[in-house]
Every structure is written in structure tokens, then in C-alpha cells.
Image (tube, rainbow, N blue to C red; front, side, top):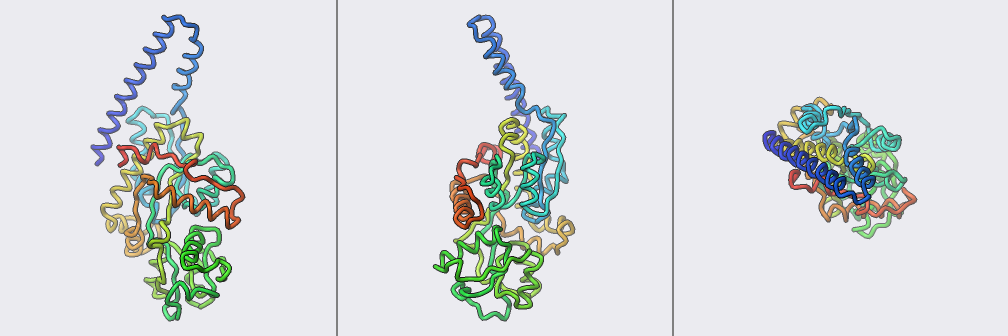
Amino acid sequence: MKKLFKEINVKKNVKKRVLGTVVLAGIAAASFAGCGNTSSEAAKSETVEALNQTDHLNIAVQPIPGYLPLSYLQDNGWVEEALKEEGYDNVEVTYTEFESGPPENEAFASGSQDVGVMGNVPTISAAAAGQARSILGVAYNGEKTEAVLVAQDSDITSVSDLKGKKIGLVIGSIAQDFLDRLLEKENIGSDEVELVNLASTEQQSALATHQVDAIAVWQPMIAQVEAAGTGRVLVDGTDVYKCENLISGNTEYIEENPEIVRIFIEQYARAAAEVSADTAKFSEQYAEKYSLDADIVNATISDMNFQVAITDEDIEDFQKTADWLFNSGNVKKQVVAKEIVNTEFANAVEVK
């Protein structure tokens, strides 16, 4: 696979050299023609030269198994290597770790991050708050990566039994988006259940001690609760929720540095392909990083699709999340998902 990516990069180098020759020839022709548009041509040339001239690529990461491809990418230095191979020797690549989406969004708002990974809810919330963000790809999705769990001895056997019950979750998170869609499908109003705002670290204990009747959570919490015998899955996101986790970036940075962004997405796809091909191997390799047993990591990532590319179905799902955020009052601006999606990189032939 590494050889394949090097061949792709070589071809792109050739393409860049040819493009440079064409641009120079065009400028020369305009000069000899003396048509009075020399300043215009010079401006175009300056614009071309200004592209991809940044000296940094700041990548935001989160320490969860779903973003394992990014950790693997970082550990191998593939982005740095590919940038040098294509002539971007002066671009410094930095990786900054964030515990969740909100603080990562703050870093994007301050301009300190260029690209990164996070869930659909914080990504779209950032756009609704006025951040110039573009969705570049799908880091992972998977219907079984979100679930409602109940205690092992619970008499709750169906979603309809959740009426009037206390459900613990992180309010305003991807879990609430999932729960609302689940309840809607079963014709249960959101006001017919009692939501209890709990940090993910509090949810397992709250379920075990019957402080709540159920919890709406994501992986790896699902696998951890099941392994501990604390609870069981009542229902997951199958046919209800795709659980989209996204690769996004600063729109201005993307527009000014398309080749650098392309290199990043291609290398991310390379890492995602390797992780997908042997989840057991990478679970063993990264278990310590996530402070989890390898079996838990493998159970977590085995249900994930590290697809990178963006489909029309994905965009429809992004829109449902945008609608939920607005209709629930979590954001004040309605986001049109297709307007913040950029498929140029993730849907390119090299990535597929």
C-alpha cells in the first residue's frame, strides 16, 4: 500500500510540474500579446503562488478508539513524509489532543487548528455558531456504535417501556440526537421521558445503582458495560442512527491550501484501510493508549466503518442532525448540511 501511495504522489508531482509549465507559458504569451491585461495575469499568478504556502498543518485529535487511524497516522509520520515528497518541506505538522468536541471547537474558533476529527453534533454546532467549517470526510460511522442500555435485572424489554423512565446521557451530545430519533420512531415524545445529564464516566455507576433506568451511550462504553455485567443493550442504532463522526477543517485553510489538505486526507484513508483490515492487531497495539483491554477496543472498532468518503446518504443524515439541533433549541441557526460539505478530497479516486 505504501508503494501505491508513493506512486500516486509521484504522479501528482509530475502533474504539478506540468501545471507550472503551462502557467508560465500562459503568462509569457500574455506578455508578448501586449493585450493590456498584464496586471490581471500577474494577479492570477500571484494567487496560484500563494496557494499551499502555509508553514503549518495543525491537526486536532481525540483519544478514543474510533479515531485510532489518526493515532496510527501520527505514530508513523505519514503526513510529514508525504508532504516532503511533494515539496512541502517547510510545513510543520502538529497534533493536539482534546478530550471532547467543545474544547476542540474553541481551538478551531481561535484559529489554532486547521483540520481535525469530532462527532457530528459538535461539528454542525460549530457551523451553526458561525464558524467557517467544512466537513471533509467521515472518520467513522456505525449503527451499532450507539445504544440504549438497561440494567441486567431491568424489566424494560422494549423501547416503548422507556416512557416515564429516567435516561442518563450527555445532554446536547450525539447520544441525545440518537435517543430523540429512536423515541420519534416509536412515537414517544421527548417530554415523555426524563433526561438526566451525566458525564460518560458517571453513566455506568448510575445504571448499576439504579439512579437511572437506562443510559444512552456510545462505544467503548457499550462494550465496557457489557463486559462488566452491569447492563445489557436494549436497542442500538440499527435502522435508526448512523452515528456519524467526522473529519472537518477550517474553511479558509482548506481553500488556501488544497494540496496540503489532499495529502492529509489521502494519508488518513491509508491508515483507515490498514486499521480496517486487521482490527485485532491494532486493538492489541493501542489498548494501552486508551486504558482499555484489547478485547474492549476490538469490540468497539469492529462495529465501525472507517469509510472516509462521503455519500449522499451521509449528507442526508448530517441534515437530520442539523434539524434536530435547531428544532431542539440547542443552536439558534439552521444549518444546511450540503453547504458545509466538501467532497473534493474524500471522494477522490486516490482515496477510494
